[in-house]
Amino acid sequence: MTVRVGVLGATGAVGQRLIQLLEPHSDFEIAALTASESSAGKAYREAAKWRIDAPIPEDVAEIEVGATTPEDVPDDVDLIFSSLPSGVGAEVEPEFCEAGYVVSSNSSNGRMDEDVPLVIPEVNADHLDVLERQREERGWDGALLKNPNCSTITMVPPLAALDEAFGLTDVRVSTLQAVSGAGYDGVTSMEIIDNAIPHIGGEEEKMETESRKLLGGFDGTAIELHGMDVAASCNRIATLDGHLENVWVDTEDDVTVADAEDALRSAEGIDLPSSPDQLIRVFDEPDRPQPRLDRNIEDGMGVAVGGVQETTDGLQFNCLAHNTMRGAAGASVLNGELLAANGYL
Ligand SMILES: NC(=O)C1=CN([C@@H]2O[C@H](COP(=O)(O)OP(=O)(O)OC[C@H]3O[C@@H](n4cnc5c(N)ncnc54)[C@H](OP(=O)(O)O)[C@@H]3O)[C@@H](O)[C@H]2O)C=CC1
Ligand SMILES: N[C@@H](CC(=O)OP(=O)(O)O)C(=O)O
Image (tube, rainbow, N blue to C red; front, top):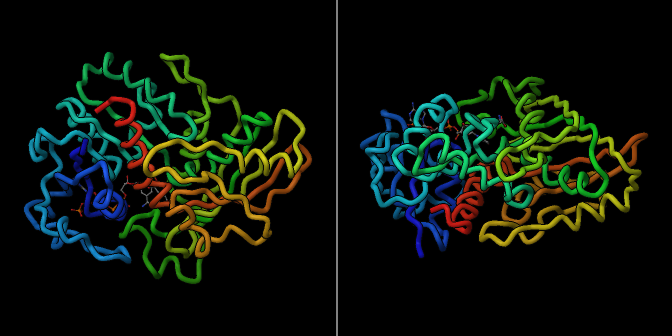
């Protein structure tokens, strides 16, 4: 059965990636696009400054962009993808859920709310069922599911594999994040060329809290945060796409490089249309992964790991994922597929 979908924030950096993924999707059909008041009423071709290095899909180009309100989205839309600035998301996503729409959101608002599932399907698909509590407590016919922050998504699949095998007590991470993570109007060329910026507002706290929720336990009612201590330092660099991260973990059990690489390579995937065949690819070359060379592995949905080394109490490694694919649009689409597979639509 084809699921009719809408995209909120369809003209933005992530919105365009969503369209790139949804237009050829075998199970989803784009039925509504929304953006700000200044785009509403225009054909998508006119409203969106298309910046993806593939042509704008012809049948999407002529769709009229609506305002971002439930009234502007047809009732027969089954699933909404939301990629709005978080302040806007906080206001309108609950309105859509109240109006009966199921929303797979990439925006950061509400990610840590107790009754909102924050999900990477390969890591914690079981948390989805907190939606039962959400519907009961909020009285919604619709539902709100979140994917995590793009830097968090990059490190959590390897952390999950290592936690399962050896138990994690402490995580330290330093990021090198691409400019696309700040959106089209985020960082000017004068700020970033020949430069690196050692601050991304709110990012460190998101990595520190969201990772603990993702790896936390779920007893059918409540999600308990993982007890590990996480500290992050986030930096913007002049790459276009792909967040590279240097990670140090302390483990409960003794760990060797060979055992760690084995655990990473064996990390289980999930059987959804957009999930990668191999979730984590481990490089033997010490200078990989690199953003330009490795961000597109598994069509941008894989996580690349390299440089695994032993430390006094655990391990050090580097990881990389495509921030607007695995880290944003691809993550939302995967969550949409999870909702469909679990009967939430
Ligand atoms: N870029 C990335 O790698 C990642 C981004 N995110 C998050 O995804 C969200 C979108 O990011 P991104 O695509 O980069 O942002 P952009 O600024 O590129 O796009 C924002 C989108 O929201 C719309 N919008 C802005 N203001 C309003 C409003 N008041 N009412 C309705 N629609 C509005 C814009 O429409 P219009 O064109 O009409 O202005 C546009 O479609 C953010 O929450 C961001 O933090 C998350 C992970 C990664
Ligand atoms: N802040 C991230 C992207 C982002 O928007 O994250 P979030 O989805 O948590 O708002 C970056 O700059 O790369």
